[in-house]
Length: 306
Image (cartoon, rainbow, N blue to C red):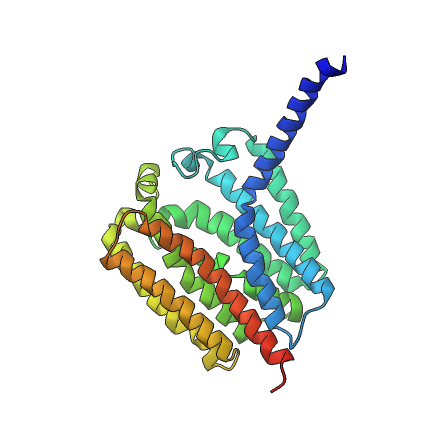
């Protein structure tokens, strides 16, 4: 009898696992992890040494939950467009594996839970994080994404907010140095996303989304990628020029930004098959490494004598 029942239990376990994997997928965990790294660096840079455990746990949990909620709302609002694109047609809502109402309820629980956790730290962090969620899930996804080829430039501000949110979680106030961290991510976002948009240009055209390669052509977009990487190099000097960071950051960020420029130059003048995708992948490791360098530099200055 047990042997006859085992396959049914096995299928049940597999089905349950698949459902939870779909819910996890909707939260875009890799993106959230990257945002949390920048938020953690913002927390650490806000104090001379290290922030308190309560701030780190409540802050990262709250920012993570709200970021995950924004991702799920993005899946809900983009489900019809996702179904038309090769990159996204397999997503849970696009495929109909998760009911829309269930996804909305899931996102709402994440959103409220994150807000309440951040409120335990200070109201400013809670409201700023909520504003970022609304900016990404509604302003960008519903309006900007379909209204202008500059969608990612304007809408990128929401994705650039986590280091500021981390800083405010610690201090309860906005600091100019925190805004420099926002500026770094804000200027990084267009070349990061446009490299992907070049690679997936036909997908966006098919879905009727006015991404820059669709409206202005691939060559123009390559020029803009190069322009923004040059701008990123200049902006990347500001933490050092303002005394926020030291020599470790200056060297590390300069090398990383020069690497990004190198990818952009090749994309513009010596492009070959797959290089736009390689540029996109480099940009992900670039921003992660940049914030790690910021943190290493900060702790080196804080803990190493002289």
